[in-house]
Length: 90
Image (tube, rainbow, N blue to C red; front, side):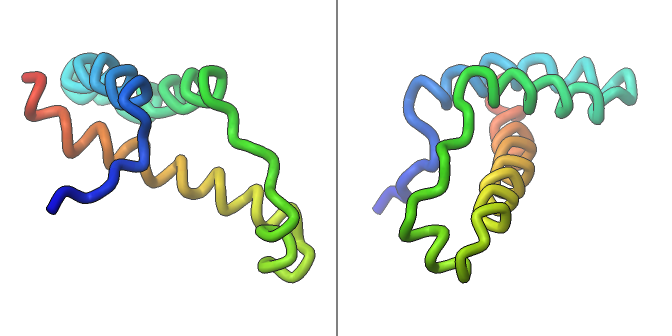
């Protein structure tokens, strides 16, 4: 059984293309700059959606809490994707 991906096929290809630059960033001790750049580029291509009414209600009416959660998810998912896929592209 295959686990459902959190990315679309297009997003996965985009991320894999950026994984190739990770080894260079790692060698130059510039992984923070790499992640900062990939995160900004990601949000330009796929901005976080506005929270739904159900999400806001589930968060006790705190729309900002829902938005922060979406940002946190991206902050965790993007580096994890790069780290899990970099060996496939070396």
